[in-house]
Length: 325
Image (cartoon, rainbow, N blue to C red; front, top):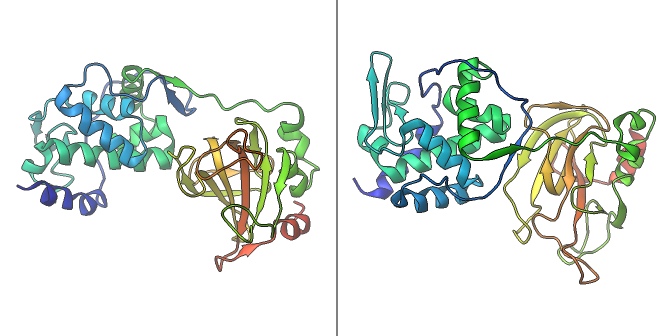
């Protein structure tokens, strides 16, 4: 079967994900903080014929090549013809796709390295964006059993192979200490991030009218949420120089307005998570289209914008000064 026909079935297949793999044995898991990887390359045991495919798929979906290759190693040992057939499942290929759970995938497709790796990458990206790295790996296997001992062991082994290390969310102190925000106005919380460099309505290199507020500081400076709400969108995997707003966290407040924190270097929350006023949701960065007006540095800053339910920008000064809780 031609590769374009194989790849064409991926989108419809991914929409029907449920259970893909059997359960593993139990263990005790570490804390569920997100993870970083010592090197963005496939694990050392990856066969050369798959290394390029895995690297390309990881780049396509904004994943770590180390993590993706570790998942595939765990599932099949890099054996494209691997199979696990019993009354409950018929799993084949590098990603061990269960055809009982995904009847729209054929055995030929499941055993095709290009199809299988792309399939695995897209699923892994969707799950880690939704749950975070540790729980996302578990959800990649069986979404309905996240947190079980079997899946904790599964995730632990994959992270160990990928040589991952936990990226601890910083304990905020000084002006970033969450308790200091109890009586702070949302506007003062935003100002505490750093120095305001571009205000509402000013022009920039990219916009004649800047519909937000830019606050500059060093990369890694914690970014607190100006108001409480629910995380409704995460954009990750962006680097400096990429077009657009880079890594972003969107939080929807109780009135339905969306607060967008952009150009982040780190993200400490995930979609669906409730956050409180003053809670650290990420860190200042230079991902996406940032620049330094002075010509030195990369222009690390927070771009903060508010969009209403009609997708129109709101002046943060007016909105934050009005909503003091």
